Length: 228
Image (cartoon, rainbow, N blue to C red; front, side, top):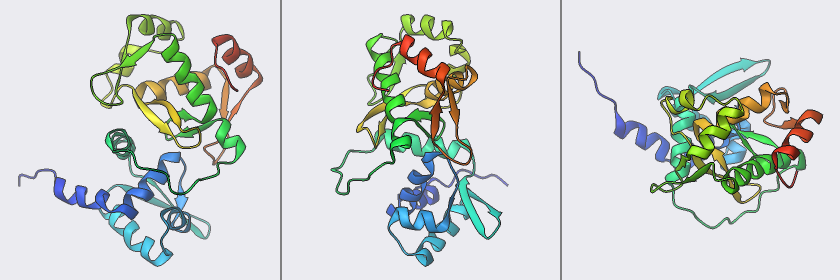
């Protein structure tokens, strides 16, 4: 029997303000409980349960029980890429509630699989200053310059493999604590992975927080990242 993607169904699922807020919360890169998602979306736990049931049914989330709690996370990286793309094209609106981000998270953290916080925005600002990336005609999309290709290859980033991935290559991603952009997309993820490989950063267990190592402090300073 032939079948086609039910675009109307998935659009209705992510189009609900409460459900898309839950998905946005999971961009932090860690699994969250139903209570945490309810609190983040500003709804009652009973209401959150109904929304989570819909997200699970449509294959956007998966859950895992650990002790007395059930944790929810993206069902696949494709869901994270969907939310990332929506964040890129969505119109901006005034921030009505000022969210206070704890200082360690503000300094360095993951936004799904790429770097955010002061580290993420500082690294992105450096890349732009060096002319490695430039804005594309499409809003918030970025393209790699020949200078950037050479520099990233020298930093052991396999640019050709990154460009071959079936996700957006590089884009501006708004950093909620810094109110500036950091680097998202496949290139942002690859750069974060390279910093981990070099042991410049370490991700804290069960957290999106990132610790900059002593080697990282020296390496990033030599690299030219400011404000850390």
